[in-house]
Image (cartoon, rainbow, N blue to C red):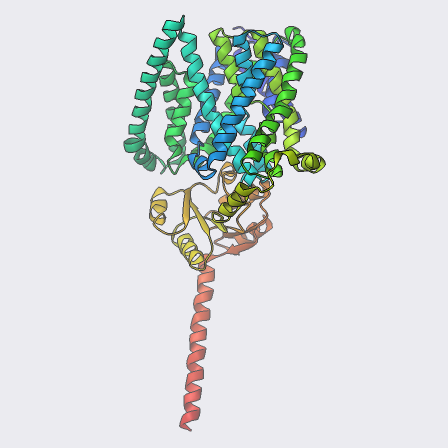
Length: 562
């Protein structure tokens, strides 16, 4: 379509500039960028200034953003969390989805919606934003807290449910009557089984060894991951599952490899940049004239999400033997709808199941709940202190399961995180392990990792030069972060990243000159090791000590002879 600025490139420049300004304001207000980007879409779209109109370029970037979002979600699908959390993740996740959708459906019907539209609205209310929750919990250093692990567990369950819902809706959209619906469902199941079988074979025999070779070049590794995500997204669309499902399965196929953390960390910025266009396109499509009529329904549904969803989770966790504090803090993480709710609404709109007004209502609920729940989570402990006396209803007399979970957590802690497993680093790790410290070793070389896996300490593929990767580490557990990497700039990036994530432990790095050591100390390093100088000093001390022992022995022998 023709741009008011004369060409699409200038339009993009204006769009990105406005997004940067509004995004900065949103960050100052401690709001997720999702809210800011939707506001940008409303501001520059036809409903307001009319500066930016829909075009194929924005639509393509939006689709790529959604594909990468689902890919990263699948990539981080840590089934180990679900297993270690036991039944709580499944019970809380499925229970919250079930009760929220049922209650939400009857609220939507009471608001005068048709059954199909009510189903979409009810299902949209059930999903919470994994991206926003993980970011807020990371900022508060609560990802590894008990309520944080429970929240991430049932958010993973929600992510799986939303993919299954998308598959079902796609099959429903292609059916014309009840008979064709059954036929379409059988066809989807057969194609899905073959698709999963093919992916399983690739996971078993192809992907892991292939990634092992590609990991020699981190840039090539990330490029392959993007190509794999987009390729399976296109395959999923051709098979009738939708692009989102294909991209999600692409992520799942790489989730069991040792490179998932590095791939995920490096794709975060690209994913967020591309998602900018989806949310802007969504905001630009809203009609403010009709949106005004949706204010009261949006407020009613938002109150249900902000209050009802946490109460549902608190009830489930309380019944399962968790304390009221854990239930409250975990419950607040579902007090908003997610980007998946908006994607689900967009899918329903494209299939003709809902109209623009219903999509506007879902978006408005998203703006309200995401904005409000952000402050609720940021000030969760203060809120709990205020209302704790009234929460006894959600706690058993004996919180047996929480005590077991807390004990289990103590058995998986890390004392020291070590970057670099070369000759110097691996010897440090071995010596620390020998002295009883729990070490997590990190390196970019797949061969080194393969050799170190045979030792008794944990290892992970990762890059000290990647600030996003630091967010995936148990920084709140480690007393020390050590780096034996031979690069001053990597150490400076690492120190800056640790300060950004408010790491409260101590940091030791290596240097190859006194000047570098001084610069690293000024950047925040607690200890700077100079391997060759330190080794030379230790060697001289050993020699002098041996020489002193020899002289002492000679003198004693002389005295004896006399």
